[in-house]
Image 1 (cartoon, helix red, strand yellow):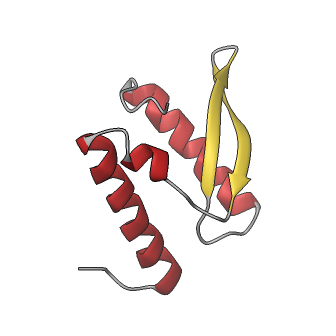
Image 2 (tube, rainbow, N blue to C red):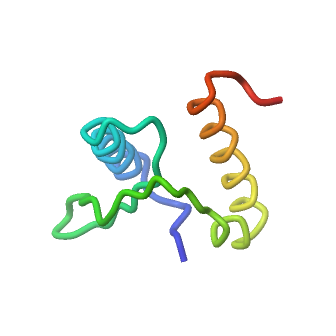
Image 3 (cartoon, one colour):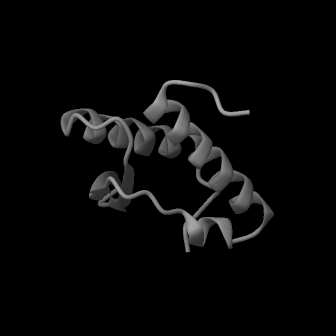
Length: 83
């Protein structure tokens, strides 16, 4: 189960790493699995088929995060803001 609550500094480190991975692969949108090993974030895998169903089923907070994720993907992929 994904951990939704992490310290802000660790969260930002994981986000920064994920963004660098997507940019290195020259993708517009991707799902990046980040794991912590030895106290540092590491990319486990990068997927262009983005699925956050397990996150959506994890509860109200997860459902809101999944919906926001899909909206951000559409916005990035097609260049417009979803309602």
